[in-house]
Image (cartoon, rainbow, N blue to C red; front, side, top):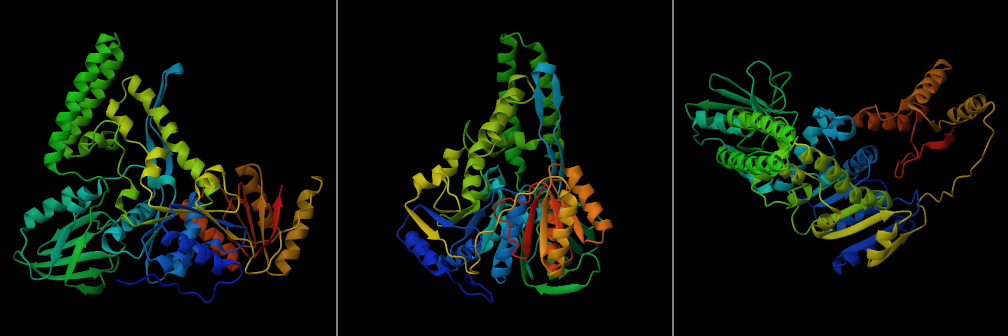
Length: 518
């Protein structure tokens, strides 16, 4: 098993060596909470990388938004090219949660658009934790939301070995139970097809497909192939195929879950009828019976996550399994920009609970839906092993809990704090244009922040018309595309990025010499 190994042309300078020594010493002494207090631009990410290399433990890095998480992911991949660096954020490009507004009798159905690429990266992250220890996962607060039970998920892993015999009918049935979809025409992620004695599978966590050739029931050959060209890439002696979804349940457990759901439904209907809430009772009965029929026939239903508690057999009020449950006991956690991330983690549970209680009270969901939720902050703390909070401005929580605060105040580059200049709004665009041109001549970059998305797009178009390489950046840009735009800014594809909230903590753009706030 490879150890963590940093591959970089840079060495630690400034306060970085003593910061790494201090944090590693604190971890070896068993300190549960530590804080790395580092000024902006002092190289806190490189310090984290060096700590990970020294302690050699599976590591989770939490960031408070997708853009920063994606940037950290790219940086850690560059530092650790020979290790498993994975990315785990919400896979929704668009998400409208199910909700009910009693005041105006408005029911809002769940609507979501899943990003297939991010879903693949999430599966790759959990798979890596089962297969190796040199794993770094960069995540958003999505990591405290419910996932399938780790033991149940791993029990569905399909092991194929060259020369072994398998009943092909049972093998195909198992792939269906693992939530893979049979499609003999289109082989894409999460699907499989059968052609004669050949089984082709596109795992949910890879861009490469598997081709398994049989001679009767014996596996004659296993190869990795390019799903587009069919080119053979590698020949394998054995392979583990992981489920296509994190929520997988055997038929026996589905049958037991249906019985639990039916019992809970009858209890809830009795309560509604005793309270004279006939509309709520009728609504709940109709919706739940439809879901039960789908579970019986297809093993799946829309909103199946709301039945995660009866499906997994958990006790009422028990915390869900999350990404944290997939880590081994000696794992390490870094909370990046902790003054922002910790309050965000703290607020997730209560916001989710308030919305779900309304759905339960008005007969849209069974009470067990309340347990399809993120971890409460207390539950989150209970699951921690050792934590390093990273921030330039630690909040009250970090100050209270930390057994050691390690300072990193000297920048490796020797840069000083930037100068601030306040100018009148009259003629600000012409002045901006002049300042931008000065930077472009020096091959430097600029960030411009505006108040609205429309203003960002219009200003971007205006600058492009004037011959300045510009792109806008706001919430409607997909997560992975945002990272590409920021990378292109550094490479010189763009000289200016215009956005709404570009001054978020943690953006590392050393080529930028001008930030204009309009």
